[in-house]
Image (tube, rainbow, N blue to C red):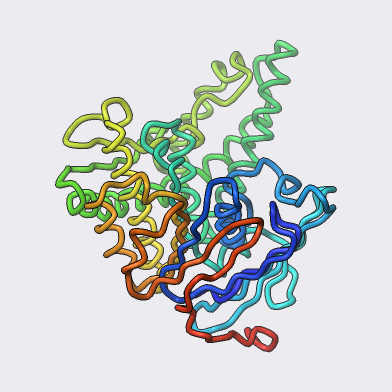
Length: 376
C-alpha cells in the first residue's frame, strides 16, 4: 500500500496545497499550529471516512470558504486509485473513488488502510471503555464487512429499544411486545460482534505482548471483557428478556455489547489503575504497532502509518525501536525538529510553515500514478 499524492483545497488552514510523498518515511516538520496535523487528518479521513478530532465536517473547511475538497492518489493490491471527498458547510459530503460515487462510508474503508498514533492514544490505557471499544471496532470494520453489518444492526435495534424503554418509563407501563422484537435483533447481532471481538483481542494480545517485551521487557496482557457472560444468540436473548423489568425502570439498556471493555495489565497489575505515564506510552505504542501487524496479517498489505508528534514523547531507546519497526514501510510523521531524522536514509523532509508544505530534500522517487484510467 502506497500513497503518492495528497491535494487539499480550502481544508483547514490550507487554501491550495499538494504534497507528494515518498514510499518510505515522510517527516513533516514545523512549529506548532502550522498545520502539520491537518495533513495527517486529511489522510486519516480517507482511511476511516471521518476525522479523528473534528466534531463536524464543517470544522475542517477553511474559514474563508464554504466548501473544501481533498483528494488522494494511492496504490493498493497492485491497482491505482484516486479518491476525492467534497465537504460543504451545509453538512453534505460526497465521496468518489476513481470517479465512482461511494454511498456508504463502510465501502470507503475497504480501499485505504491507515493507522494513526498520537499522544491522545495514551487514553487507550487509562481512558474510558468506549475508547478501547473504538480501538477494537475501527480495526475490525476496516477488514470485515460482515462486522460492519452486525454493528449497524445492533446500533439500529439498540436505538429503537432505548426509545421504547424511555417511553415505557415515562408512561409507567411494565411491558411491551416490541421489546422482544428488539432483543431478538440485538441478540443476533451481539453473537457475531462478540465472536469477532474475542478473536481480535486474542490476536492483539499475542502481538502486543511481544512488542511490549521487546521495547521494555515488561509483560503486557490484554483480555476481552464482554459485558454479557453468554455468547450464543438464544442465550443472549433469554438473558435480555429476563432483564426487561430493570431496564424499563432505568429507561435505558443496562446490559449488552455496548458495555464491553478490554482489560490491560502490565507485570500483573491493572494498567488502567497503576500504569505510569511511561508504561501507558509504551503500551499504547505496542497496541498501535500490533493493530498495523494485525491488518497486514489479514489483508497482505501493511497500512500507512500516521505518527502525530510522538517522537518527542519517546526516549531514545523507544525511538530507535520504533524506527526499526517502521523501516521499509510508508510512514508520515509530524515533529518540531528534524535532528533525529536527518541522518536516516530513505527519509523525505518537509517544512510546514505559513500555511504551506514545502519539501526540503529530494528523497521522492518521482514515480507517478496514472489514476485517470486505473481500477477498470
